[in-house]
Length: 228
View 1 (cartoon, one colour):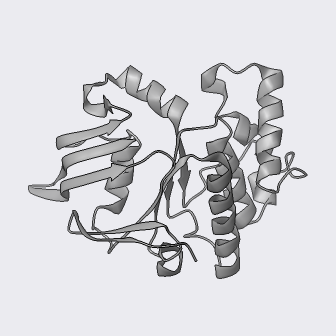
View 2: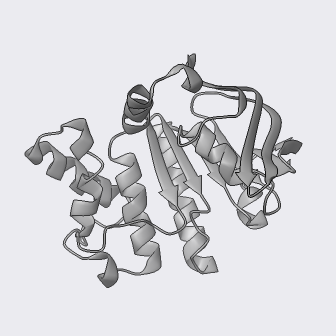
View 3: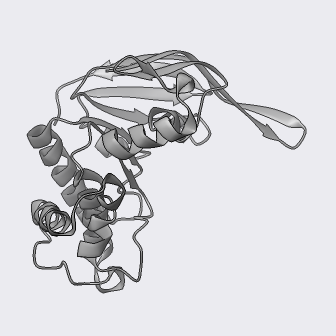
């Protein structure tokens, strides 16, 4: 379970101080699916970075299962990210010189997974996203939607407790967007990970069981609804 208490994040921009988050309180249960939306500069990506342990708050606390990220040294925080959190980004972030199979395997290397098991798990992860026959293809030989499927497989191959997705459909056309969202929702329902997604897309936001809107670094609105 995530617990955020009075989370503030400030950045220096030249002589100015920019407050990206301003006293955010948030509880997120295990296995919950949350979508975060709001205007540019509202704090969405900053919130996701804090949930992922990629940054630390200026004030307040971010805890996962009772572990306050601020109390962890960098090595322990890196291990927590490695073991428990998967990330999916708008830009896919695939290594262009590696095949789809090899890209997925990269998530297992830091875990010390043996080669045979690594290959087996990566192949199974690709199959779970509908790319079981494309493992030997380079990213340049795949469409944008297929590249994002590889990125999703890479994020989930280690069976993380949490999946964080920052505009995962932002570079895709409407049809492919819906296919990727259907895939993510299906994997979430099947694997029961906690799923937090940032999006500008109102059509995707309306599909969420829980939706918060960030404005000027604060939670301005929250809705709970049945998925479409």
